[in-house]
Image (cartoon, rainbow over all chains, first blue to last red; front, side):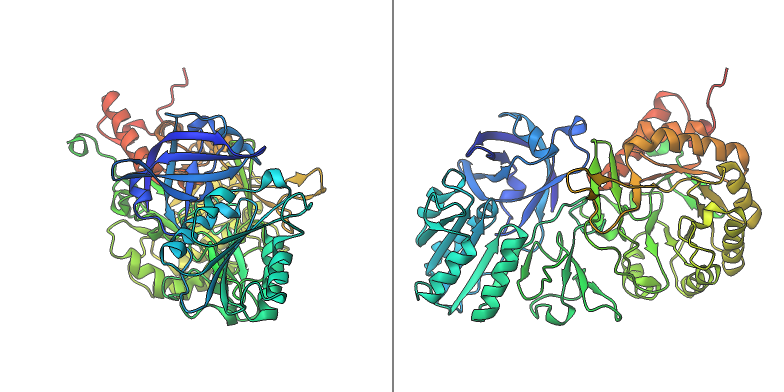
Amino acid sequence: MIQVTSKIVSNRRMTANCWRVVVDAPGISSSVKPGQFIHVKIGGESGPLFRRPFSVFRRIPLREGHFGIEIVYEVIGAGTGVMKGLRKGDTLDVIGPLGRGFELDRGKSVQVVVAGGTGAACLFLLSEEISKAGLPLKVLLGAETKASVLLKKEYAALKGEVMVSTDDGTYGFHGFVTQMLDQAFNEGKISTDCVIYSSGPEPMLKALASVCRANRIPAQVSVERHMMCGIGACLACVCKVDPNRISKKRDLESSHIQSVSDKDFGYALVCKDGPVFDIDEVIFDD
Amino acid sequence: MIKEIVDLSVDLGQLRLKNPVMPSSGTFGYGIEFADFLNLNDLGAIVVKGTTLHPRLGNFQRRFTEIAGSAEISTIGLQNVGVEKFIRDKLPLLQKFETPVIVNIAGESVEEFVTITDALMQADGIGGIEVNLACPNVQGGGLQFSADRDATFEVVKAVRSATHLPIIAKLCPTITDVSILAKVCEEAGADAICPIYAVMGMTIDIHTRRSKLGKNILASVGGPWMKPIALKLAWQAAQAVRIPIVGGGGITCAEDAIEFFIAGATAVQVGIYNFVNPQVMIKTVEGIKKYLIEHRMKNIGDLRGSMDLS
């Protein structure tokens, strides 16, 4: 991970409340893996106190052999409020790439990407990798309403099928993206011999966990938390985990997961042990 | 070249630091987390996370929130690996560096402070002990130790008897006057006083009427806003005792640190700004050097307590 001052290449509105910003951060774009994030100080000393974490949407060519990184953000607070006012040539102080990302599971017959809202950004690098690898891909995008569907065009350009749900039924399936997924399994549109990768609001991930349990499907989910340091020092971004269901793929030596004998849960650090977890590891009640 | 011109070294009891800048416990993890961003050998000391006798999981979500751009309120709840695992897993990683390691210890009783100190005394490579007197005195009714001068005295005295290592007494003087507490700590055998932890506060979401920190209500308030208050405490403590003062509270840059030296501090701790800019302490050291050169001072000691009161 590195800390760099990065110039903004473009910063554009996508929907009523979502924006996309491209920053020139070569040291990060060359090493970022799907599902990893960057931690950004917005607006210098006059901006908000802490950095804000954003998942990387994609690498984007700026000039010959030189890639920038693009992030998609929803304007929800002081940080993103300042961010939307920044222009080409303004700078951001960026730390990254950070965290444990997705790991491609090639053993299943279908790769299923389930995104809620801005979670669509977090899953794109992975979907590109799946598409390039020629693996069967289904992308399920959930949004509140037709106007807030994100990145449909970008996903449609990949080799795979894109399905859209809206909470109000103004576009595609009427209901939550997890309900669309459940129906697709029930109707045989998607084989349950699949692996799921997901990112979205926590209630959505919780609903996904029950769909996965019912169909015995492995899933990797990106968990979101407010963060202070982003590098494993402050212990603010904890996620409740089940100590008995920690993924065997984890290197326990370097893991920050902590549990104590008199409690039936442990805490993982989202910035280091995540943001991507196996869905079975996470306890969604915090 | 600059290194040869100015002397930044300071002494806390028998502990010599190559420069007066160190992190505040809890804002620098175990130090290793920052190794990608700075050379740990360039720090005066590394003060590690508050260490308890047994491992602690800490508090529920949510653990912090930002307030009005210059403050944070957080309640980690002393999540830490416990003294045994600290010595086994964390300390060896720090021993690769020459910078002294100061262990912040947090006990629930006088006896527990002593037990933790005894355990640390069995380990090699510890440069000093910082006694966290902002801990609740569980046996004494739950008030912070530093709310009470007798409890403060007892803890520092007991830790003093258990170790020859330099002791920093870290206070949270929101109830009892800092001058009184500093004197009590000096009398009990502390080598240095750090006069402030983040102070306790709370925050409410007016739409839900719940704490903005979920199930957590009381939490520590820190950040740049607290510097004037912290500076006053450093000043008062420096007036009260002969032993060194480790100032801190709201430091974001060299200029902030320099105010503390002028007020009488021997060393400074940088707090939550480590989370904002992981290189802040290195920049602070560089800025202090530059200031001394510009003001034709050869020694950081020339700056200490140099406030012009005329």
